[in-house]
Length: 484
Ligand SMILES: *Cc1c(COP(=O)(O)O)cnc(C)c1O
Image (tube, rainbow, N blue to C red; front, side, top):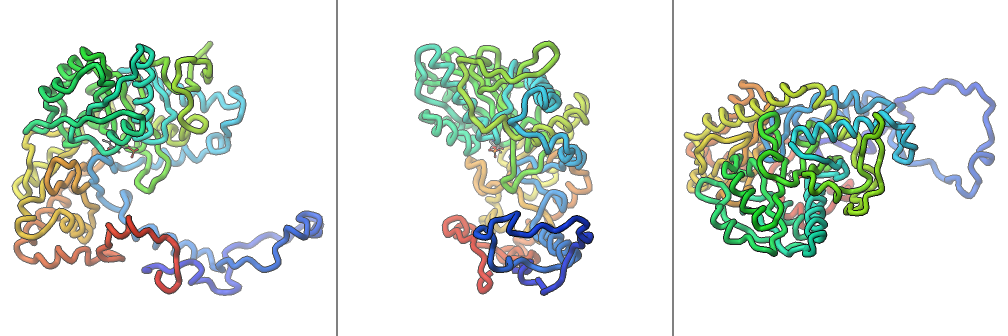
């Protein structure tokens, strides 16, 4: 372990607090806690000064790579900078000290914030109605598919299948399967887009819907989207959009205007909530007017200028989350939208696209670029040329850590060999993009000159290359003083 535990640096008698002398009569302990509930031994707590504790946590905070420390171009994950004003506002007591069991009239401000956020999301997506309940993107997908099922059931047949392209994010087929549908995978074309012929060949009266990410996971805009929507609707099916890539669209294209019936957003990606450590997320779902009666309860409505929870919605799919969703994530998204305004959001999209294309053109001579056209907010390289010389994509990813960068997403999407999926995001400067390109180019040269260094990377990090397969299969999270 590069950093000892607090217990290991503890020194008896050292302390990091001081309390004023007690100025009220002390009550005998027996009167406060009955003897049978009192502990017999001192608790074995570490004893440290404030400085010891501060240094310990600062050391821990810089062992890992994180977005406040360095560039983090993890494709599909949108590791952008999260403005600190979000955190400041999310810590206000008026927000942190409210409870979901409070009466509506005691939390009108919070309700208004949620109601207005729904309106902003409707506006940005071109949809009629929104739920904020889902706690993640995948949870939003599941909610969307339950809505799909309820819609088809209301027409007399829930149908059996969901179609997905082979470029889909893994959560898409998982959400369809967990909601009781069979999944059908269709091919992508050479250009990396939906194969319309293959889609049409699979559309029949048992298809409940088609789930599509747009721009797709190759970072390409599905330019035949109007024809796709038309074909799906002619078969009586619904068109679902995985909107995790909305930072390539907002202010420019609205899912509701190009034929989508349901879309989920990832507030914790697009709308700047820190994520990556399994922390709270939020995956709101927006739907067209035909589907709004099926949204989860309670639904937020406005009556006489005030916002309320409406529980009386007989066609609703019911509740899908404890209480109302992750409120503080909604709050951060709300602050983000209000700070940027509509022009600011549009510039987010423009800069996300500009940054990705600039970086792509800086790298295309040195790495294989399977899809050469103009991209949206991310692009996918292949490590095939380097692999021929004995260096895998995983080795390149590890070597990047030595240059101070987090790796791109690797081996996804599955349709590109040795994939390196790069999403710089809109918050990075030209200097940072140039520095990353230089590192990637330096590694491409090292493949010829010092292959062993790459194969042994990382060499500068607190721990060396970990056995990722074993870490997942043979999970041992209990600390031991002997083995660390
Ligand atoms: C991140 C992501 C998801 C899943 O979102 P979670 O919040 O991690 O559940 C789904 N689709 C795409 C394209 C994504 O990038």
